[in-house]
Length: 201
Image (cartoon, rainbow, N blue to C red; front, side):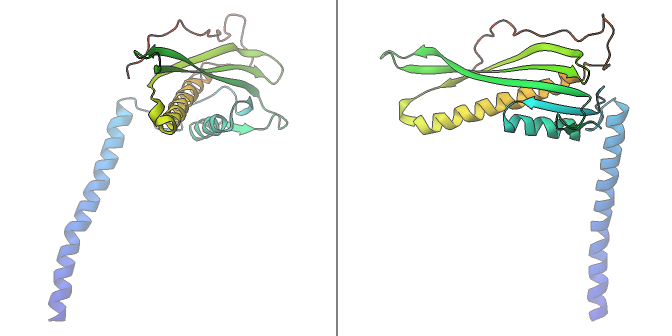
């Protein structure tokens, strides 16, 4: 009887193994289809600089930027004293303004604003990206009855804008094609764009 039980368990194990093999083959096939469509897996970014130092910026932003650069390319983040090939200078700004008031004159909506000013220079002082700005905004309703919750919501929105800015910044760094660009090859600076309409709530 014990032999029959073992045999039955073996029969049950075979379909599971088959499912596992089918899942693996499906994943491999999906990866091949994506690669055929030109999709690039993470880690394919090729920056002109292989050693980048970051000066300024809040710790959470710098940490995310380090993860994205090192995880998505063969470039490493080093300290300014460790002979970087390029130095990224960052500064951040936050603010808010009133969007609307209710009938009692109490604030009903705020617009949160987040700016990142940045520039990139080579180790020899060559200006690779002139001073540029990433400007973002988010709308948020407000109520005095939920002050703590609204403060936490504002923090989340600022964090979202910070992550968005880092994503844009990594793409901006990829524009630099040479550490010694010819006069017509420098990356142009980007000024803050015109004020955007208030995002929908």
